[in-house]
Image 1 (cartoon, rainbow, N blue to C red):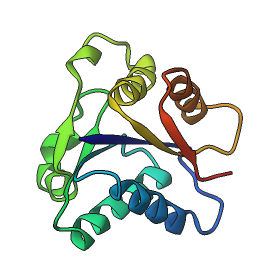
Image 2: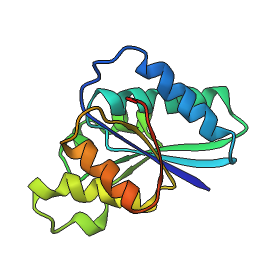
Image 3: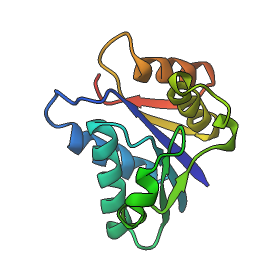
Image 4: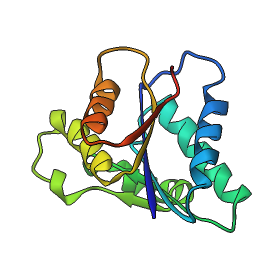
Length: 151
């Protein structure tokens, strides 16, 4: 099984990134038959990636492709919009390891949780600061395969 996580800035200012996301996912899909894609669901890049995974699932029904939303903490929106989230994601995960983490640190810890489980990172990092950059730095230290679409 191949696990891939997405890490990118919330805003996407560069044109053509959606096509690059699709290409990166399609290249990865040639390497295995079973895939889990983790997304934090926070921003434009994560939305592009999630959409590309859903599209890939339709184009490749012969592959076992799963899209999981990983949240840093429980939120009432999961209860109020349950059907909506279940229609978009195959799984919704709130890691138990984050239960006692202060909410200001929870997103960073969630990102590390995803990277720790991933083989590959598809990134969109165009500045040298912020949570996405810190996630990519962490992934690099962990020896993960990283494709930065902003390059």
